[in-house]
Amino acid sequence: MIKINLLGDETVIDTSGTWVLIGYVLSVVVLLIICGAMYLTASAAIEEGRVEADTLAVRLKKLQEVTKEVRELEARKKELSDKTSVIAVLKKNKLGPVRILDDLNTALPDRAWLAEIRETGGLMRISGYALDNQTIAAFMKALEVSTYFESVDLGESREVDRNGAKIKEFTLLTKVVYAGGVKKAVEPPSALDLAALSPSQPQAGEVPSSTPRLSISTESLLPTANKPTVKGGT
Image (cartoon, rainbow, N blue to C red):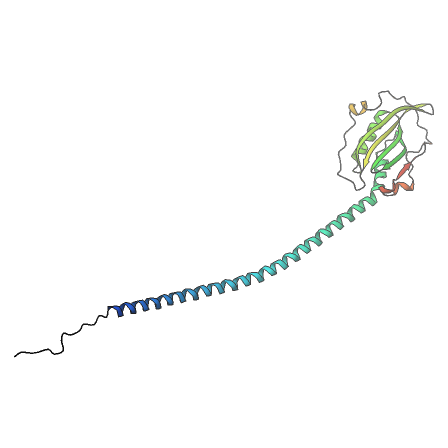
């Protein structure tokens, strides 16, 4: 039997393009999902960082306030310390003239007496008489022990005649410290100290009993700025 196909050959439909389109769409969807997830993660991290930054800013502000208070307390502490130091110095300066005169009188040897004491700008000039050079050297060494005298130097020493007796007239220059200083050790006068005095040897003689060792005027108790002066009779 003969069959006749009136419809012709069966047409084959190509669906490969459809699968490619579906794959592309799926890729785009997956990419969008990944980008969305990354965006959400980044947004969360940014928000967390912003919150942490705000927290740190608050803590920093508190620390700055605390630091400011600490600095103010330190400034007040320093101010109080400075005031305390000034008060201590004022107390020492108040007692300084009295202590200076007391140490001066204590250091004065038995065979010496003072004629005049002048102080200007912290530099004191001491004039007096002694029986010999050893007495003057001993007086200088005794002054150096005091915390109120510094750099005791011999300004002048010469032999004079008083009431028929050969004695030494001397002048000492020293720096006075009304606040006091560090206690110093005393050493006996050396041969060089004695040689620095007048080379002539004094003769023995009696010191008139009417000559006072130390006469203090009320001006000697005033502060340095008032130029205290201590004078004695001759």
